[in-house]
Image (cartoon, rainbow, N blue to C red; front, side, top):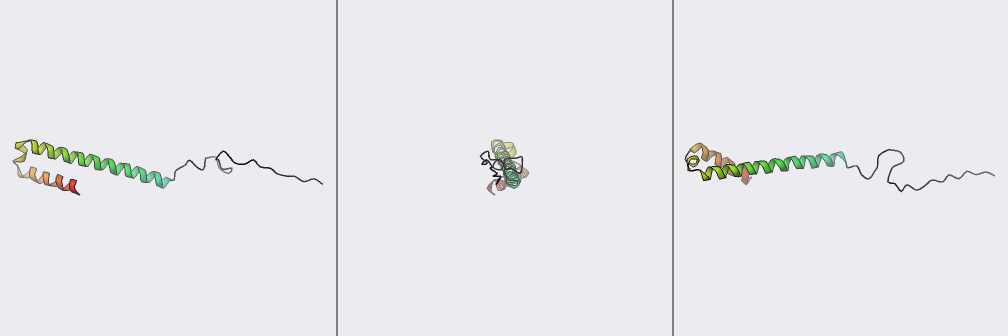
Length: 84
């Protein structure tokens, strides 16, 4: 009577036996794309608000720039952009 008993060691390494990559440490591609989009939008918002605030500071500090109608319209656009 000969029986063959197969014994397998428990998988304690975190690696799947069928693949060569760890199963617990790879983020989903969609999650990475969401983080990249969030970082891009956030940096764009910071640059936009900073630029508009600098424009407002420059126009209000200079009497010569406050005298023209076109600069008043540009300031109006900057304020509207910040308040959105």
